[in-house]
Image (tube, rainbow, N blue to C red):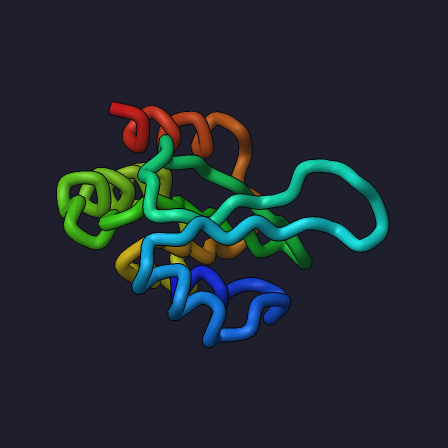
Amino acid sequence: MQEISNEGAKVLHHRSVEIGEKFKIPIITKSTFNNKAGTVISDIIEENTIKSVVKKDISRISIVGNGIIRNTKLISEILKIIEYEHLELLEFQVTPSKVVILLKNIVDDNILNKIHEKVIN
């Protein structure tokens, strides 16, 4: 949880995240502008997801999941896809809860689908 709050927009005070993590209390964030449901941060493991943010001919792919750092098979498969597709890797970062991949140029949906297939299998 601590890492997630540090990666965000610094909306949560780090102490509230520490307490939530220590006592297994879910943290619910909501908007001050509307009454829509917000984000729930907890220790419940959900399905891994992929999101891609593209800016200035750089693709950023994030794979988020609790304990993902221990999934060496997934990390190896992703690197094989990058090599097979001849993609130029700018950065590959692995943390306990996230894999971040920065690639030169815009990545098409075909490559994202290949990575997504490895994540869900």
